[in-house]
Image 1 (tube, rainbow, N blue to C red):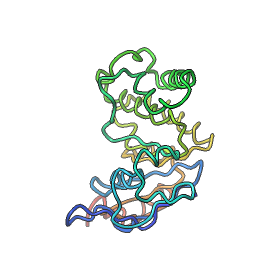
Image 2: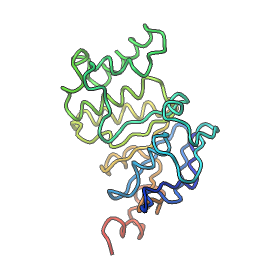
Image 3: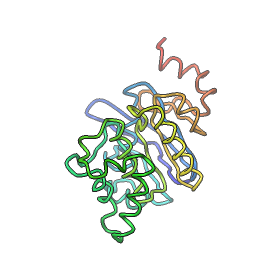
Amino acid sequence: MLLEARDLVKRFGGLTAVSGMDLAVAPGTIVGLIGPNGSGKTTLFNLVSGLYRLDGGTVLFKGQDVTGLSPHRIARLGLGRTFQIPALFRKMTVEENLWVPAIDEPWQAVRRRAAEWLDLFRLTPLRAEPAEVLSGGQQKLLELARALMRDPDLLLLDECTAGVQPAMVAELLEAIRRLRDRGKAFVIIEHNMEVIQDLCEQIVVMHEGRAIARGDLAAVKQDAAVVEAYLGR
């Protein structure tokens, strides 16, 4: 397995946000992570990527125990992520945002790779503009492009299609498929079930900090625990 998260626990005071959560991701697969708001999905991403410290459990990435490592050390091992609200350098240009994560690499290679991602996500005409002038959807695309600059093996995408124009969503999904075919793996938090159905081989449903169902979309939609979590008793 590329990623193995075992029995993860995270508490905030008296609130247990993640409780005994397991997640396994194989190379070259796309896993969808769904669940009602507040079910712990983004907290799980923060635990796996090292942004939050675990209160219990273990995270293995590429066979290495990364529990307790800082986010930048985990990122350098090959894990990239995006955020529900893009975390960009807003005063820096679009192009400069892409240079930052690869600043220690050969300069010409960095510029060439940045140009490729800008072209793929149709951001080239905006490359000299500050990131703060981009639309919400464009900011999400820029953040994904930045996450790809270090050629990660696994990407955690937090609602990457929210606010993106439909035509660009189709191209974005096709780009994700091509990256998957090259061996990259993804875990995607997404509320658009069409995106989940189109992309994901496996779906994990979270509720109250734990997984209540796993399988394809047809199976989880019929699961009584999933129906109750979304619609109530």
